[in-house]
Image (tube, rainbow, N blue to C red; front, side, top):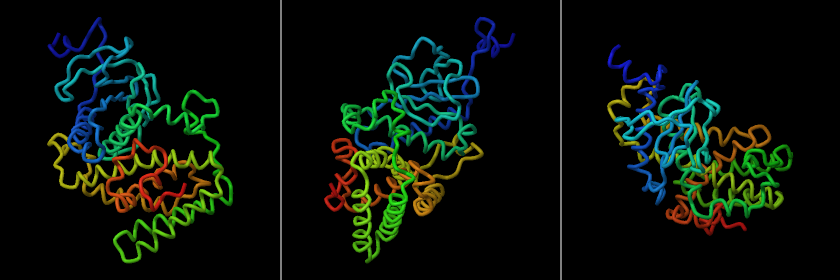
Length: 328
């Protein structure tokens, strides 16, 4: 029996192993978060970067402070610099989510790039998006604050965040939402022009009109989704801005589908602006909130460069971060 076989068989069964390229991608994401995270969000590096990687047959977990007994320790990994735990697959292999999956700890639960339809660079940036959710959820009064929005309708599973009965199909609301998103796009694209203040005024007017025709609970839901998912999308771009001059590890550069972060940043921005202009709330529903938050976050950078300091203190309404946007 070879040494390799002897080391990878326990009780007659081969031990599952995480693929080399997945380790490299995860290591790159953690390295980027460690190096740049605090420049975007103060305190994010204090939040454990816990990941459950789902393959076709196995789940691999790293950085969990106290793994549950159904995970087997596969030993220390020199690439990830931590122990890897594994168990048979339980979650959907297409997942891209963050939730308290194991012992109440918020875990990034993610399928492989192939199973989530992403190339390596996109997948790494998605991990950074999900790590930002870990940051949000870790704030002491996050969950009590969410409960105070009174949007769950008695649902204790959290699925209301996806299934809330927002009036997506209202002709009036869909029409005003389109005016709002178009005005937002115009303001963002004109941010360095002489017409910016005029375009900003139009955007604020259209945003206020949307608020006025929404029921208070529906406006709270829209604001919450923009605050949570939209600013997570904005965070992806802020990482990409910082990565323009970053040199990936040699191992990362060797992965065939890796796209340079600088190129990906330009493609990312164009694609999000295109979505902002093309999406309609009656067809794309809550997915629209991602691009809205991306654009409003960049607008806030112009209006109040220090707005992120209050992000977790004045939660759920982005107008809290600039007096010009305070429509409440």
